[in-house]
Image 1 (tube, one colour):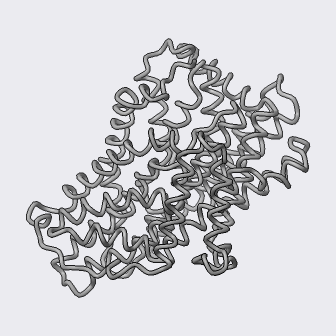
Image 2 (cartoon, helix red, strand yellow):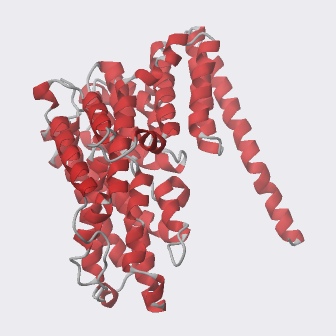
Image 3 (tube, rainbow, N blue to C red):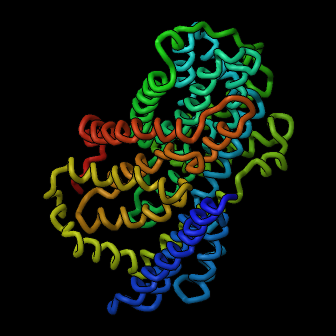
Length: 481
């Protein structure tokens, strides 16, 4: 390294420690400032703030941070011991475990690859391939509950259509396809309640605070049309940013991905999944919670003779780190509310920013929706984990809605749709990292930033359009009541 390079690198090495010191100093002031907040509230505020800072600025495992925070709450009297030991008994935890097993069955049986390959194989040109792949990826949101899982299941499609043997002329097409797949996987997440762990965390935060749930069918009613619109818009942007008209019209070779007769394992998985989804959509009729249905599906999928997975293999496929993260994050968020710390924070925010003007729906809905969208869309720049963003922002959004006399369900759903956007940097999502690290030509970080510069405003505009054109008419009006 040159002397000049060494000189410029030293300040950068000090930026992070200085930033951490400033963040913790501000947190200390925040914790010590409220004279009307009792000690448990101060503890919850300190622990939660520390977790948020560590999530945003370090590479420590997010689940470890959340779990350590949950233990700290107990040690300092802001939560009970039973709260920690019981956090993994929540319905959302078992729904997540069951959903992971269902997703694993789709991957290992070959159904995920068959779905993608069957649709994409109808394409004759590169442009058609991109559009059909986009349509094929959206249903996977219902089938595989992890963005990285969906990325792993569809990674073979990249080499199937843009293999290394196609030559240098196909490099631009391969780069564009490599950026398309994770982009659609991420923006389509809003389609399903089981599309991400952050959705399940939002569901439970909502239930703990106001006793309401989104519900699988209701979420699909709100999320699927939005996911379809934003996915198609994203495909259109990718095609025009990275491929010329002639390149979009280039013929694509035939692929054998997902071809051939369906295997017994695929038929079994398809039948069990169809029954599971049917029961999820009709929860209001039969009364069984979606978590109970997910556990039943897990048992059938791993049962001797009729199952498609060994039980041990299914348990290994569960992302236990994410399960623990969600459980601990629930406890952190609930402690903020139970100790009145969240109420104090929201009250202070109203006093400082004069947000009382939106109380009772006095402010224009356009302003409120735009504010929620901007905050949630930008959150991925500071916290790269979906669940960390929900753990940090979910409780304040709910409290803000209640204090402002807005509909908490509407506020939290709109915020969740914004938090699902995480496309600016590769580190913002494991799905992006998976496709960036693949062998051969792939997208570069500057390609992602270029795409995000267009897609983030598009996402914002679509959120506003959907609120006024769909959400407010289907139960997501901001006005409480």
